[in-house]
Length: 471
Ligand code: BES
Ligand code: MN
Ligand code: ZN
Image 1 (cartoon, protein in one colour):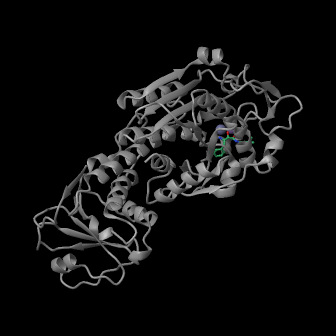
Image 2 (spheres, rainbow, N blue to C red):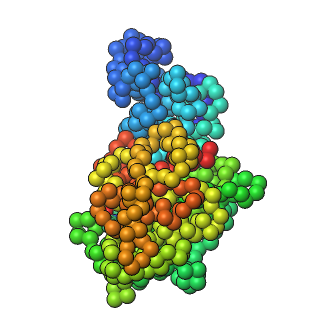
Image 3 (cartoon, rainbow, N blue to C red):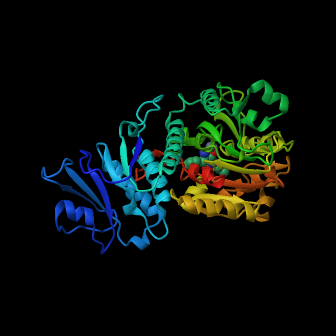
């Protein structure tokens, strides 16, 4: 959908998009339209008719504001606004958007990725053809940037696929359907695939995942993908995603208002699959494992009850004083399984706590880690992709609380105070000495209102950053 031409084709019938910064003049616009006063305010997009003088009917001029102040984030928003505005194929001069700190290659990758994600639409379940595919863009660039354009498109497409998985309602995205999708992805990109069903989960003793699943008629799944980008299978990093396809809360039942939107409780798992698709699609030189424990959290006569004591894959016993704190239970087994598969580093991603949403809102992802060097590497990647993350504490204050059970090794919900850190401390007990980062995407995984980067609903958050981490 992105085609490059070296110079502006004056016989084109496509509208042409230019960019202009504050106090700058634009030679081509002047040639075509004479001396016009242009609004160079950031994100103002002027549509200028050519009144039949040229083969193209319209010129779009994007205001950049002060060029020096442009960041990858504000450039993304500008491209997003433009992409949502365009109703037809167009031609764009990408050199107009280069700054002292953003190269043409970077502009190109950001552009293609943003066009793909900003125009995303979720219509009906099962529809994996977002409308951007109907639009083709001619990119004017003196340098060959086809590679960067293609890379951006791969990442944008992976983000959209993950969004669709999460936007599907709970009855159309069960653990089995999620596993089937993952299998298709593995086949497409030639990744190793393994799914653990009830029998195998019982055999290995994934009792925490099984306990959460007990209240559901839908069987659980532990989905595993292996992407080998290096010559030998060494030092894999595991991405562990919460695949809770619907969270009613179990016997600690959610009130109806809080239950709405709980189809998004598998967004961590969906975004792990999105990251795997991007990593494999780009052929990155890294070894990456994906582990996604998947189940519903419902109620029936067999469901886990409040005050039950359950086991876990790691052998630790857990007092369940709140069945709605189920994410940490299934992740406990997911993290342990990743360790058993040889993960040297683990990043888990989950819509884990309402407390994180209260603390950070819907634009910052909460992050926790037991390893500063690993965290710094991750934070650097997030900076490049302009995804907002904020590190929150996880230390002995919280660990003491999760270890305070009088009947088990751990308790899943000792207190509401510092809820996001308590949940992280619980997970940390399973990461143990493995370098680990926990991402709480409860606020950022889906959003209530649309933006320049797409509509309301699932966002595909952290797919860019996780992909960047391995680039
Ligand atoms: N899936 C929820 C967390 C959540 C809340 C995600 C709001 C998105 C928006 C999680 O399983 C949950 O229910 N957490 C409880 C934990 C509590 C019982 C300690 C919560 O946050 O209330
Ligand atoms: Mn819950
Ligand atoms: Zn949940």
